[in-house]
Image 1 (cartoon, rainbow, N blue to C red):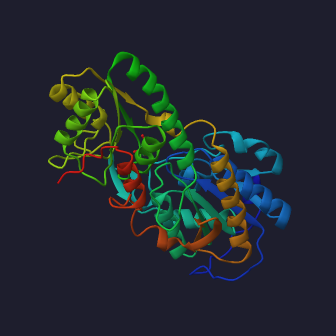
Image 2: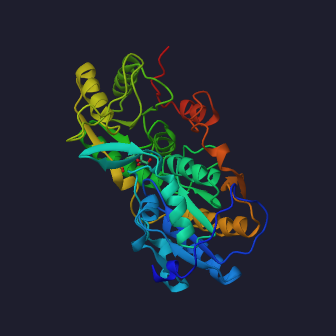
Length: 385
Ligand code: F6P
């Protein structure tokens, strides 16, 4: 923190001005759930900021928490990011709890929720940060936009394995997660075929079915269930029985964690100590497997891929995308394009106002090209009539 405290407190201009300006120190944080490629962004930002502009770069620890508890933050040098593009996770740490717009604070023995963004703005001034690069999903972008509206110069970088962020064709992390899920499906195939079983794989994605759909197509699934297409269990069982009649005694079912039957609701995991809270999505894979077993009388097993999808090495695609995003974030800062988020449009890296990325989520089009590709292959999506 010695580096961060070296500057004197300056007055923040409100709102943050656009247009090129003289900068000395930028900061970077990673917020929300981690995903493969975060380290490649950090490396891109640090290298481009130092080599092209001679700016100082401050690494903020554990997402926005590091702007509330500022002592753990540290200056990042070029050697700190050497070779990290191949590593999963984030060297800065992250958090998907403790949203500063709704932050848990203990008052008179009670937990109350408060907006602590004013404190963050004061800390950013104290640390002499000229611009903050926030790498994250929709939650992180909402907080980043709130800081921008309070006068902080910010630039956003979109990440998430879920690929559900508006305004970018793809988020980094998604390709690595799809690869992991496809690899799992390849493995499940051999055991399902040997035992003549039905194997269900539950994958992540929150309320979007991008991972399930892409991995399902790549991994040769027989059934894919998406949050965007409420399913009819009867159709799924019919499809599996028909496969059996025609000589395929096994089936592979990919279930997105946010999928639900047309006649029912999404399934959430119960979280210890959080009575009444909705909890995390999880459990639909087992629910579907049990129902299939009951209606077809076939032996069924379920695998839940979970956080394996978020860990490990990023794919080459994700390393390149994340690196390009990091370098472009620095270009945006140099051009004074604050309040913008980098994005991929076709094959080009561009930028959009952060507001364009947070007004909704990008869902699979239930009648779109990718869904029709799956249907053309004979994959059953359980589409309820
Ligand atoms: O948003 C990424 C994601 O991995 C989702 O796909 C999943 O629902 C959620 O985060 C899990 O969050 P946690 O890490 O808190 O279990």
